[in-house]
Image (cartoon, rainbow, N blue to C red; front, side, top):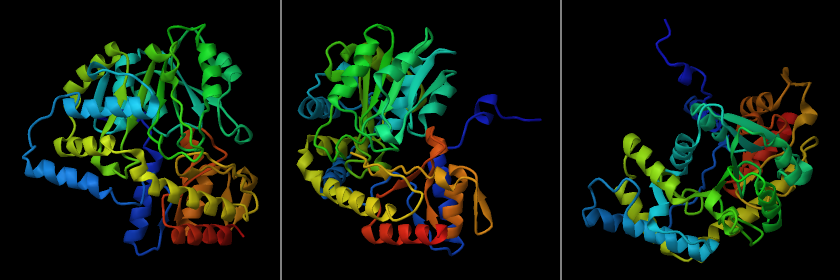
Length: 394
């Protein structure tokens, strides 16, 4: 008898975490695996942030935290939103969570009823679809194209909306494509939504600072969208703090209060030491992390140049984050070294086994023609990884 719930039996395993686990297994067997699968900066957390954490330990921060975050951290978040995004929030509109992933789960839990549809421009971050499904919502995928830098157009949005549409979730800069929506592109989407006042938007801005075009715009900046937009952010990517697990939202007060309510029954407040450290991170001028952004930009130039030399890899130039998302469908149907590649999942597994390079299938992101390659690795590792991929496919 199956003792597990239908909910868990129908849930997909995170493809990025599964590939990382597979890579760890192979390393344990003695194989020299280069991991380009995880979205994790290879930098250390900045010293000034670590110093704040040490100070918090010495100051004996060790008690339960408020469910929605320390007031001082909320103030730092409010200051950050105003400074970086020209967005005005109050403490009652902010909720601090154990990573942006929990923030997204909270939002789905408090917003979705069974059958509610959530529009997801493809490619989308790997967990969006399953988080929606866990709340019995219906993910509605909107296919985008590399020729349009993987961005959903106003016409596509209009065509996807039905009477059941409750929300739109997107990230900018995008994981996995690195695409950044301009102010004009977001305005065009917002114009479509003016005819549908009950549709809410989740704007995932976790990669906000890893932006190579110098302009980040938030959907909530539009006055007619402010009360319908939930802005999600955190410190994992920009501050190289993936393991510290702090994310946050700025949202309409009713939604923030609901997220606080559900979090109170699931995890309660986020880690006390991490919260104190994040106050220092968010109070700092973004110029203090520019060295990481500059290095990612160099790596982007490097990896795009190397991938251009591989026949059958079609790439565009991502404007943010630290991923490339090449179309590899030219290899589908071909047999290489005895392995037939029918789809992106086959390609990712082939590269792991034949080239000892871990990537992630685009299928997990809603695009079965592409693979995601992270360049959050040293330039030496990138050069060697792409050399191995080229050799394996040659």
